[in-house]
Image (cartoon, rainbow, N blue to C red; front, top):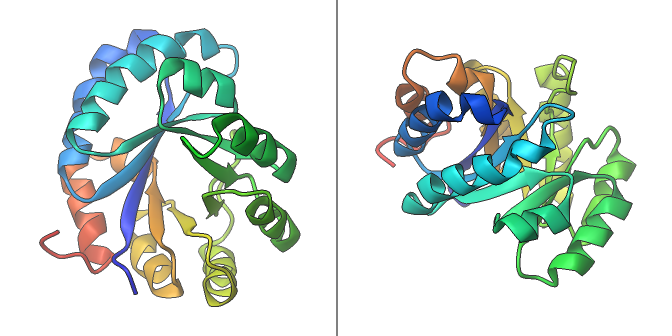
Length: 208
């Protein structure tokens, strides 16, 4: 089984928070093998993405991590992001057609097995399970592990599993996730790099 890698999800950011967040983002990327990071903004703050992506893309590039944005593939391309995370098979198909294989297309917001299969059939580069809704809590860990196990046993499209806590990393990795997504478990930590390093350890990547 290939080594599990990490996928960071930023808190919903506005441009005014960039100077404070950017150093924490850089530290987090230093903590371990982070494959990708998803930049999120609050509803109505999409106009801040240009500044956010420009700054965070520079930081991510140093660590060879892909930087993705939410929802809008055309905006992702215009800003030079490495890809987009969208919801629904139709949005996946649109993004795949827009990118023509040049950028990453991820699928989140998958509330059923059928949703996940449809997204993969539409050409998603990965499917994500267990992430919280914008104003909600993540599903129970057991439910996410069950979904990951089902996917890993049957499908080849990589799977990202969201860990609400560092304690969730090991069971999600054991279930067969290719990537572990982390949000508040990193950003609420006193030392983001230490939190990422601990996630790597719990995923079985000691010394990575």
